Length: 104
Image (cartoon, rainbow, N blue to C red; front, side):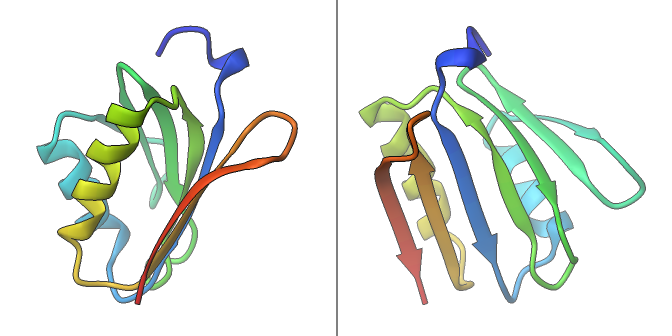
């Protein structure tokens, strides 16, 4: 990902889905996946560098994204495929909420 110092931050919380299932979804849609610990993952593509951690029954996804409308649309279309509750928010460096997505 290019120049993460100027990139907004994504925060997401999920229920009723495992970290492994989320990791597989992102991997299937082009993210490079690496284990960052025994139970957690790093997910990276050209426009994001994310960490997937937290409890397996309530995974958390957070990290830097290059926020553009096409990237946000791609991400929300990916999340629509999930059949689990989730809350996703993207914040600017100054803490202002840029956008959010909620399901369930």
